[in-house]
Amino acid sequence: MDIVLSAVTIVGIMICVAFVVSIAIGRNDIADVLWGAYPASVAGYFWWTSGATSVQMIVYGLVMLWGVRLMWHIGSRNQKKTEDPRYAQWRTDWQKKSLAWFYLRSFLQIYVLQGILSLLVMTPVLIMAHYGYDAHWNVFIFAGLVIWSLGFFFEAVGDYQLRRFIADQKNRGQIMMEGLWKYTRHPNYFGEVTMWWGLFVIVSTHGCVYGIISPVVVTILILVVSGIPMTERRYRGNVEFEKYKKKTNAFFPGPVKR
Image (cartoon, rainbow, N blue to C red; front, side, top):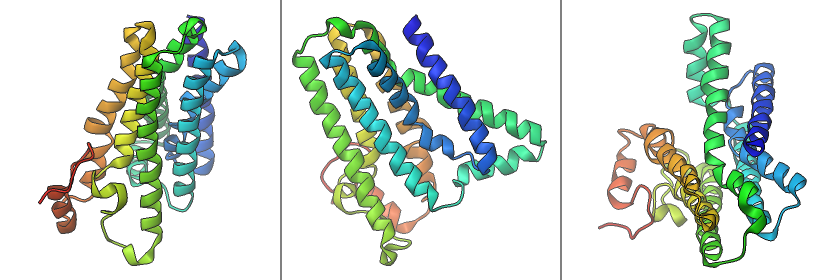
């Protein structure tokens, strides 16, 4: 219970600080940057305060590596752009009612909801903090490391390849179909989901069923809610993208279809 309370307290403080900062800078897409910060901060806290074992350090370290890389990637990308269109549209819609309604809706729908989801996603960290003192190296831990590493490769390399593609002026208005993007339309999303399934495999060595909450939540968010559906909605009706869809899997990497 103390572990959960510590995590809730850390995330709660970060939510409040993020909300105040968002008001000061006039943009709510800071929430995207903080998606990686919540689990990484909680993992760092437990590592610093609990005298972590080697297995605990592996889980905490993987989560912090994931979180810091994601924060840097999204933060550096957003720094060069105006507020994300999703948040800008919400800002316009919610402010029509009143400024107070905009602040309340922003705090609850963006920051509090995100904080709740992050607590569900970080269940491997909480489980390891609770059970990790008697953890021993076994086949599950090695298998989980391999799965996580595969996911990290797809997410990090996919993001890097897309960033380079967008930075090249000759690609303006074109669809990314090179590198990992040749085999899946969303290698970064595939990597994100795969990493959390890898962490679940690692913590499953304790037989704790609650660990599955994390990858299930991430999978649903990516495949059904805000990941692939929201991203591909932007390209609806784009002739080049429709051709790309017919040849390339949406999620799982696979050969190019004829």
